[in-house]
Length: 373
Image (cartoon, rainbow, N blue to C red; front, side):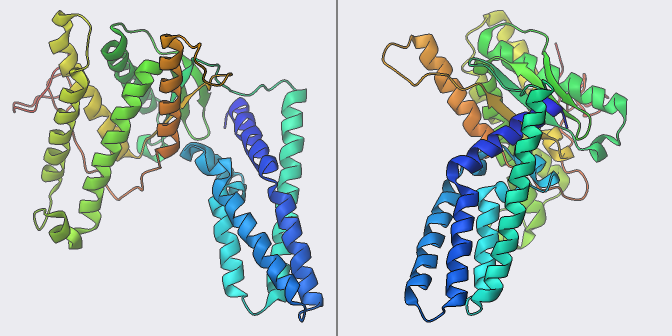
């Protein structure tokens, strides 16, 4: 894990937890439970516990850690901090009280242990953040008007081989290039913002307007892929899904291909660049969409983030500022929604991306073959 990125995630977690008063709420619940255990005949203590739980559940449902990107939540899980995600802690509390509805003394012991762990973790987080500041490991944050796309490559998907990881980065550069030309009419060499060797994560700079288009495409393709995945996993539901009784990998590829061509046609219709480039870009865009789908099938995850404006929206904003604000909101919303896709045994998709159409760059002489200009 990149230290500057870890600093950013821990700081955001610390701010969310302290803003929500999470540890204090757990402490108040512990006190009320202790009172009930000491004096079980006083009905007011039970009412107090119910009120505190209602407040705590509401706070946990609204805490900002719930909206962290999946990659951030994965980092918290890897570092034993997943209970700072509101939905995780909420589930833990519900489980404790469900098991101990008539044994408050046992519930008290479990909540006390939970309070000790959360307090210790928050203290450790505080000390670590202070250490980062002291040693000048600054947060990997984005300035307003900046955006990034993250590529999380599981080691097993490339067998931890450098040449295969390099290919993933080369593919990603080509994908970004296509979407930047689609939205701005020009391309540039992507800049690496952050690189982590632990989980093979690379964060690349992208123009916000291009990030909107790419985030849209990836979210739509992820939705298409989940449909294919469900078909493979839940063949018992074929009647409800109105699909053939069985679906081969070839049929899955054909279904995905049809979806990607429709998405390509939709996205290229917004192109306002040089007319002479439109046909070539149309071909490249389909290849880029194929690459994205194949990568999702490999277990590769994409994440998005954009720098939030430092000021609130106001009527004096220029059209450019309003547009940038809208792009930022969209990118961050997609970043929060992009859930990690569950892996399944084996590959499903083999969509063509090679020079002559097939996945490995060989020859393919059918209508779906595409070629790079």
